[in-house]
Length: 67
Image 1 (cartoon, rainbow, N blue to C red):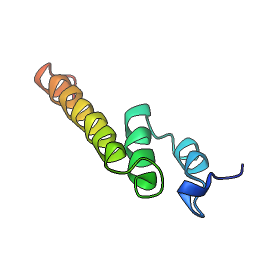
Image 2 (image 1 turned 30 degrees about the horizontal axis):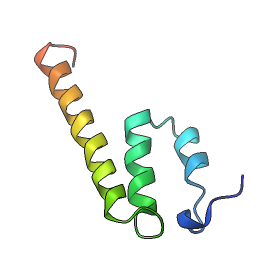
Image 3 (image 1 turned 90 degrees about the horizontal axis):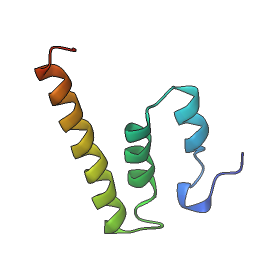
């Protein structure tokens, strides 16, 4: 797979798939990896939104005794 220029030399998608990274975690990585070259601070806000959602989900799971 050819990596888009905003991901530099990494092939992020291949890494995320091969390591079974979840949807939210993958989007956090994506937005942090590309923020300077593509979306600027808006990509950091997106990464923060996914991180906040992931934290909220994990807190809910823990409070329900699932973890």
